Structures are given as C-alpha cells and as structure tokens.
Amino acid sequence: MTITCVDDLQRLARRRVPRMFYDYADSGSWTETTYHANETDLAAIRFRQKVMVDMSNRQLGTTMLGESLAMPVAIAPTGLAGMQHADGEILAARAAERFGIPYTLSTMSICSIEDVAAHTSRPIWFQLYVMKDKDYIARLIDRARAAGCSALVLTADLQIMGQRHKDVINGLSVPPKPTLPTIANLATKWRWGLGMLRTKRRTFGNIAGHVDDATNLESLAAWTASQFDTSLSWDDIKWIKDRWGGKLIIKGIMEPEDARSAVDAGADAIIVSNHGGRQLDGALSSIQALPGIVAAVGDRVEVHMDGGIRSGQDVLKAIALGARGVYIGRAYLYGLGAKGEEGVSECLEIIRKELDTTLALCGLRDIQDVTSDILVPGTYPE
Ligand SMILES: Cc1cc2nc3c(=O)[nH]c(=O)nc-3n(C[C@H](O)[C@H](O)[C@H](O)COP(=O)(O)O)c2cc1C
Ligand SMILES: CCCCCCC(=O)C(=O)O
Image (cartoon, rainbow, N blue to C red; front, side, top):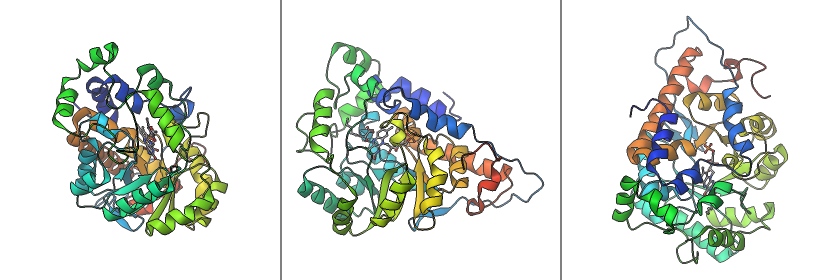
C-alpha cells in the first residue's frame, strides 16, 4: 500500500491492529464531539498564499524547554502503545530519537521506563498520573529521574476516566481476554500476533505489581477509579516538583485561569489539551482554547498544544497561534500499528515534509518567523 499521508497509515493500522486496540486509539468519550472538533476546527483555518519571495534554505528546528528539536513536534504520552505493536514504546522512542524529537512515555505504558531508557540514548520525557498512594508516586518519580528522563509531564485531566463506549463494547483488556469474538478478530491479525508471541512485554511495565488484574475492562476501570487521586489540587504540585527537581510540564489545561494557576504552582510549560477528546466530551477543541491561554501566560512559560494534529499543516497552524510546539498522539500510533518503528518514522517524515512545504508556500523560510500573519483573518480563533 502506498503511504502518502497520516490517513493512509491509519487505514493500514485499522487492518493490522486487533479491533479492541485500534478502537482504543481511534475513539473519544461519549458522543466524540470534542474528539472530532479537534480535527475539524484545525481544518477550518486557512493559510494566506505568498509568492515571489525567497524560500530557499528553510529551517524547521526549534527548542522545547531548551531541548533542540528537528521540528516543533513531540510524541504525546499514550497508554498501552505496546498493544498497538509489540514493544511499541521502545520502537516509537527509537524513531523519535532518530528523528530528533522528544518521546513522552505514559505511566500506563507496556514497556517500562527503564526498558525504554535502556533502548535509547536521547533522554525521554515521563508522563505521570497521580495516584492516591504517594509513596508509590514518589518511587515512580525517582525511577524516572534515575532513568535519565529530562522532563516530567503531569497529566491533570484524568483523575476520573471519561466514558469510552467503544472500549466497553469491545471489552478492552490487557492482554486481550480470549473471548470468541476476540479470538476471531485476532486470527486475522497474524503479524500483530507474531510480534506479541516474540515479546515478553504484554502487560503494564511501570505499574507491575501495583495493578491486580487488567484482563477485563471492569477491573481496569475499577483499578483506575480506586488508584487515581480524585482530590488532586494545585497544592500537590509543590511536593511533586520538589521530589522531581527538574523541568515540569502540566498537561490538560483548557482554561486561562487554570493556566495561571499552573504557572503559579511552578510549571515550566503547560500543554493545552483535552486529552484528544477522550475526557470531557463537549469541551472546546484545543486549537480554539489555545489563543486565550497564550494571551494569559505565554509571556511566562512555554505553551504547548495537542489534539487533532494529523499533518504538518496542523502543526503550522498551532505554531501560528502561539504554541511553542505540539504533541502527536494518534498520528504516531497509526504509524506504529501499521508498520512498527518504520511506520512512526514514516509518520514523522510525512509531517516534516508537509510542514516544510506549507511554510515555503506561505512565503517563509524559518519556523521561528511564523506568526498569525500567515493565516486568513476570520478563519482562526482569537
Ligand atoms: C490511545 C491513547 C492513549 C492515551 N494515553 C494517555 C496517557 O496515558 N497519558 C496522557 O497524559 N495522555 C494520554 N493520551 C492523550 C494524549 O497524550 C494526547 O493528549 C492526545 O492523544 C492528543 O490528541 P491526538 O491523538 O488527536 O493527537 C492518550 C491518547 C490516546 C489516543
Ligand atoms: C485502560 C486504562 C487506561 C489508563 C489511561 C490511559 C489514558 O490516558 C487514555 O486512555 O486516554
């Protein structure tokens, strides 16, 4: 199959990944209104075409939190990536390293922090879910530091889980429970199955010994409900920041007031994010929320964004509206599910090429020069 864009990788992933894990990625909560709005609101923004300007020697390089990046894109933390493809977290982290962008490992990954760090030389970023057991969280933070992680991404928007109907229908579990429909579906995914037979990494690597039973959705959901700290507040950031002692990013900010609180609490960067439309259905799209948050705190910290980024054009639109950089979730997962490490590399190269071409056609040579001037007024949120 010829791959020209991220949508092609998605089509291939749909064919190759067992339904329960493909759907886990390609779904949002409830009516999926916010999930789809993330993409459609980006698509509605228009560029201003510029001609007869020197567009030679273009450059896409930038920094996020002082780290050099080949382009303003990082890999978002995604739980269960090792179920999209055997050893998925290691493969994706290696592709990100080769490309020159940061990889963020989820607390809910299949490969452990130590395992991913052992297979890469660029420091990875670690995403933290705050659970009730503070000793356990402290140990996780210590493990991330010992493994050389260079930033801690604290996710603030999933202290309780949004309802994802496809996961309920599919009976999502880790590894898949051998029910009749699951076995019938798995029988058609031989490539995925061979990979899983070869690897030893088939359950949650970071929380091994902490999760009792992940073999059905009810126990996974019950586990999340019983472990995650629903009383998490801004006051908790201090001890987490002190324990970590490095760069702290707070993820899941959609309101200017929350952005100010995050900065006051000590965040070095924030991520404008609605968790890819997987949490509060009916929330604004990320690109709609971005300008207000940049106006509120953009002079104090770096503002990052995720949600709906499927192309280099989407990246450019977010940068034009004030994001320092963006994260990709599903786009890279589709590459991973389609072709493993090679698919993630292809995804990154597709996005780089689209970003580079669009920058040139907007009449610019350097990503650092991008402002909202490249967008058609009235088509973008202000
Ligand atoms: C399958 C999947 C799993 C995710 N798991 C996590 C997670 O473990 N931690 C987290 O902070 N965000 C998680 N997210 C949210 C992403 O980090 C990110 O916010 C979102 O994917 C961005 O939207 P996009 O997929 O449209 O790029 C997950 C998203 C997906 C699609
Ligand atoms: C089924 C347990 C998943 C934990 C949360 C991972 C996540 O952030 C997401 O699915 O979204």
